Image 1 (tube, rainbow, N blue to C red):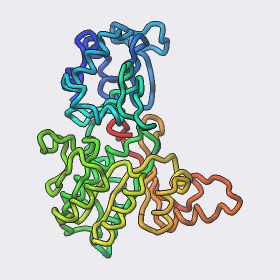
Image 2: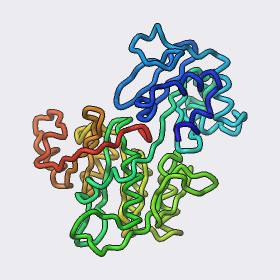
Image 3: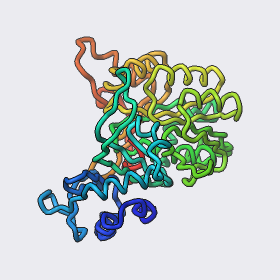
Image 4: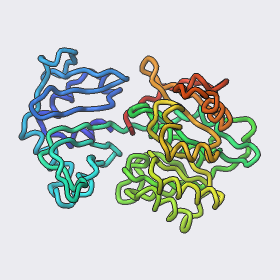
Length: 351
């Protein structure tokens, strides 16, 4: 997987990164390429600079420095030599390449009527390495089951960027479709039909409509489709029993999720937030939470290079919010008796 990703890079830059020590390359999460500035990588929750010989250092003065020509070549490659065709992606500030790797972009913003029209003079790239961690959901999935309904509860997965939300979501999709429930009460349950709205092409990493990641035997994917529209399209056309979406937060996302609930479809979603306090501080997420939409919340955090999962019920999350009468910010620890597990899965496949 990493070898195919590095093939997108200019030869000199690729040559440097191919010299990374195997123990670092195997855990690589981010490659930060900035014109005229030190080459930086992230792995296992750490951040270091890369020297021309591939060795890593905390001293940026020793690092390899990509030049303008390398950045220009990289932009041409990831946009397939057509900035016009990639205009929408440039407007959003990222490009997703085959394999589900998202490349964030920074440069000069061009405005039109006060709104971002596109990026130009792109001089910084954040290559986020997508990796499947098959089985990483095995410890958290049993805590999400609705035993009476013989399926999964409506679930919101929460964490800051680079903590493994997309990795966990992808493996939940696989396990639910395969009927790999990992719980005695679920013995004999069949797998569920899962619809995925993969707006950023990171969950399934489809190529020509076919997933390149293992998303299970009962998964249908709408690739590069806006979340709200995709949810409604799946409900109308694919009869899903579960819908999975990444990074919700807009009002239209919330409306589509409510429609899914009314249609009897279970929803698994992710969102950017540090803890339950952030969930209740974001208007759209807070409204969904107070309506009782989600029956379970999964909070991810990085501890010692590993991802820790903490699972809260709807009642625990609401109780945590209600016990702050003085307006004091609350954190995940304020919720009572959360289920807590650890997994070797890390970030790097999604914000």
